[in-house]
Image 1: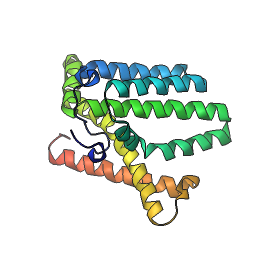
Image 2: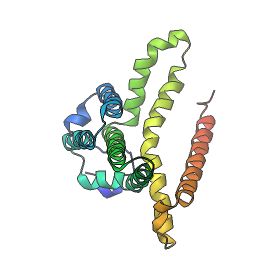
Image 3: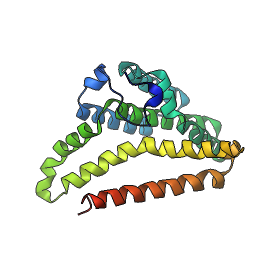
Image 4: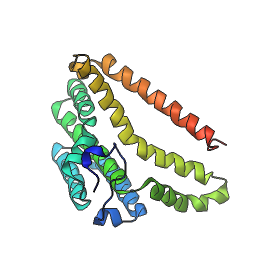
Length: 209
């Protein structure tokens, strides 16, 4: 068994749980429905708590170690707190808490999917789902790759936030979350650099053709 502390963000965590054995198509469908329903219908903090509880149940079913999940979410928490404070200032506390809970549940659900599903399985699933659209001229391979990368990059974006926070702490300035410029600019720069790196790698492999 791989130590939870050695699993990079969003990388498949081997297991034989019911969630691991569930087909990727079913997991993607459930994730999509969950994200849409929680975003559209949740209007109170109680609904937000229920959303988080449903994701926690999925984590238990997937037998994902709590320490691993906590580490995966470590970088997202400061960002969620920052967004919550901004919403609190612009709206009210009730709406801020509700939005933070919904976003926390969404990020946790996406991480649960990537931790229990191999990237190759996701791409195969997208390929099968999109194959009928090939007759319409849709580039199935490119679209399935883009969808897989979109899901995979969610935890990597969390990692970018975590890296910025670690760098600020190393410089003796842990209050980064209170400054939009000090927090946002490094995250945006890291995101752009990662996007360029991925684009260069895809071009080198002919994926951009």
